[in-house]
Amino acid sequence: MNTPPSSPEAERTDGSSVRIGALVPLTRPGWVGAGQHLLVGLELAVREVNDAGGILGRPLELVVRDTAADPQRAAAAVDELAGLGVAALAGEYHSVVARAAAARADALGLPFLCSSAVLDALTDQPTEWVARLAPAQSHGWQIYADFLLGSGHSRIAVAAEPSVYWASGARILRDHLAPRGGTVIELDMRELTPTAVCDELVTQRATALLLLVGHPEPAVPIVKSVRRDQRLAEIMIGAPAGQPEFAEWATLLGDDSAAVPFLRYLPEHLSPLGARVETALRERLAEAPSFVAFEGYDTVTVLADVLRSHGADRARIAESWARVAVEGTRGKIHFSRTPGISVWQWAWTPVQVVDRDPADPNRFRILHTG
Image (cartoon, rainbow, N blue to C red; front, side):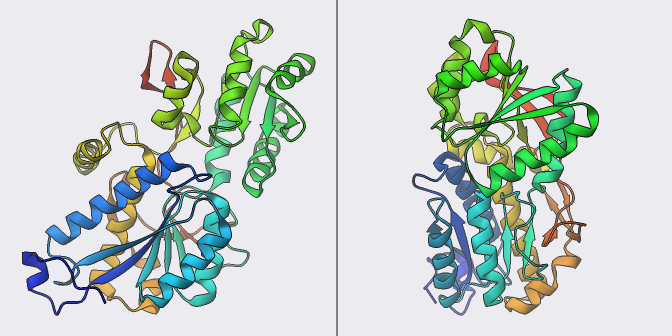
């Protein structure tokens, strides 16, 4: 084990740390902004745990690996971290990457608390080794579909790239909207330019366009093209996966960044704990923290509680998911077996549909809650 840094907490230990492996997208093609927020949340919670005496006197140590949105790289990182003796895994933002990490963690018998990925089928079979804080995609995206219907949108186009995650999102929207009179029109972004997307929206008489694509490419060029097309002045652009949450969206799009509704996993009003953590996250990020930063903080908070109560034995950690009852930044965290979800699931974190205010794109408006 590494020798911990000299501190009052370290001086009371036998020199060993309790290690948590952290999977985070920190380089392209990963969503770097999300990865940075996730890591800052993880690191803040680790610092606070250690300031409070660590894990029964032993310092908590974060061992970070960059997944770069690459499933194979993530699986290899899980193998490496398991060999380094981590007690558990934390993190990951991209669903397809988290799915690869979860499969490997399950195979190795390594507990994994997934912070931010939402794909319902995080593992092919039910597992005792994996738990998740983020709401399942079916839960959040059905709330988004209800928002669309409530806003008067029944002909909805989705600009989609090939991916398990995007395909799952399109299916959830279609299955939820069809019985309620809604139609989902898929636009294949392997074949269409942003200009051709505009032509399709006019032809299909769509009233809403949802971006089921990567950021910044091709999401930003699509938004710019649609906003400049006078035929589409009334169309709503939406991004259920949350691209507009991060500052880079506003930087790249300016005024065009506003009025693009997305999903955010925060309560309408933060608790005193949430408000304190928000202040600390804002200081470290030098910008408003996204919900992903709160997810990172809550991940370590849960793992630290489990480690204090059950020790660093991997099997005991996995056996403890059902007994978790931890006050997080966004509510009391419990895990349960949820129908259709293969991992231990917090059901559910608060869900909002939010956009950037056209009057001030740095301010967010809550449009719908679920």
